[in-house]
Image 1 (cartoon, helix red, strand yellow):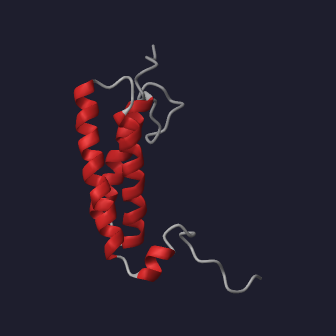
Image 2 (cartoon, helix red, strand yellow; image 1 turned 180 degrees about the horizontal axis):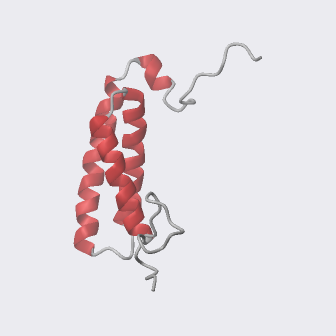
Length: 112
């Protein structure tokens, strides 16, 4: 008998699919972004990851399913990541700072 919460027994799922409550999913994505940020090689991508981390932490700080103590911890992390984001944005050259919000990939010079 297949148990619905066991992904191994449920053959309709793949290894990359998870069913989590929203707070856990947001925490998981934040941790993945933090890992990517730490291992990142490109400053423009790191800045975008830091911005998403700050946004995720701001949302989590107010999540009703999290305890007040955990919300406080997340707010402290949010503050530190905000400082990190501002510090990394100040280090970028002027042209990189102005193109941060632009597309990640440059448009082709010639259409075929």
